Length: 256
Ligand code: NAD
Image (cartoon, rainbow, N blue to C red):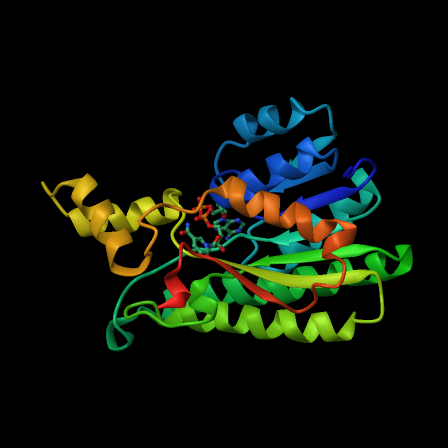
């Protein structure tokens, strides 16, 4: 399958899952608009290796005005967003009664509201061109809860709901909207949780083992490439009748 001539905007793609998905889409020939914090040079170089057009925009997606600037750049530079991967997300762990209000607001803004804003900005162009894919990176926490993750679980459940609505609203078109729901993927977001578990002087390998053993029966991490390959499938003709789905990729987490 080729995505040559198509443009993918992958939010939060300077590291982790977003970068992994961008790599797989670039390998299939898609031009890539990267987004995310930190030095984008390594991610740009990695994508450019595949001979596709690549650019980066540093928009903070917790800010609606900056999301609009990101889409304005996509139109200027690439003319279209054919594939939107709403991936950027953050985590904060604390019990509800101690959950910092600013952390709640930030997580809802980035993990949920940015998915709405990106989708509303991408859809008119997708409909006009008669083809589009919106792929939301939700989480198993879009389908089940865990203690300490009130904002994250609320936001990801919201993403799964929003995915269903967009899946229905586009059901008679060649635009689809689906969510991927990963279990543990070893990225900076999860490394932080492993480090917190290990604490000062703890054994990080034991903490990693405990983290997997608690929830993920395979006791192996999902990889960004696993998710990228699934995103690529959703872009294919074979994936064209997958609509409004929340597809868990979780080493068996939700089978328990
Ligand atoms: P990560 O920390 O490696 O990457 C997050 C990316 O988002 C980075 O590029 C970062 O710069 C960017 N980002 C952070 N705040 C931003 C903001 N305000 N505006 C724009 N970009 C911002 O995390 P990850 O593990 O790759 O997570 C990616 C997505 O996958 C998130 O939505 C996360 O909830 C989801 N997810 C992760 C796991 C996991 O186990 N790692 C599991 C399920 C779901």
